[in-house]
Image 1 (cartoon, rainbow, N blue to C red):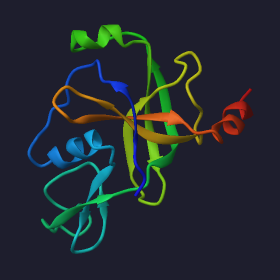
Image 2 (cartoon, rainbow, N blue to C red):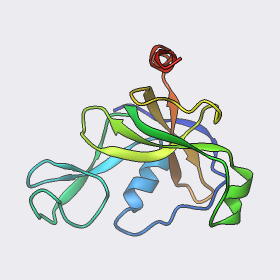
Image 3 (cartoon, rainbow, N blue to C red):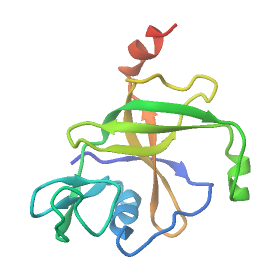
Image 4 (cartoon, rainbow, N blue to C red):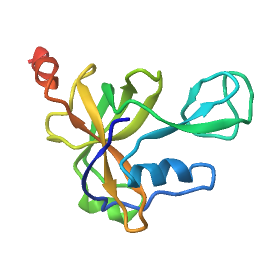
Length: 154
């Protein structure tokens, strides 16, 4: 199991924690990236939910998953909408990341230069920002091997 690095405190709106997703948020706060795994067919599930999208089973456990992946898409958000707490956080890079080994795509913020969002295929690693209630918020950082990919488009 790879441990997630804590990269400071989350300053945006608190995550909405539902009883079915609470282990995900708690795991992040403990430095672990956990997703649901169907105990009937073994599918790792995201989005999180009460039933397996592949086989329809309601049975699952929580499993630690790989913390590395590659950027599928990334955009720079320059204007805050919704909760006013986002106003102090923009500009920021929001992305979809294809996680290694588990076949799921996770959303999250990439902590990088917002004027140079990473390109498709850029290697990233999951990390987390802590919250006041002991949970964590998923984020990503560029991996050392990402320089090669980010310079290809130059």
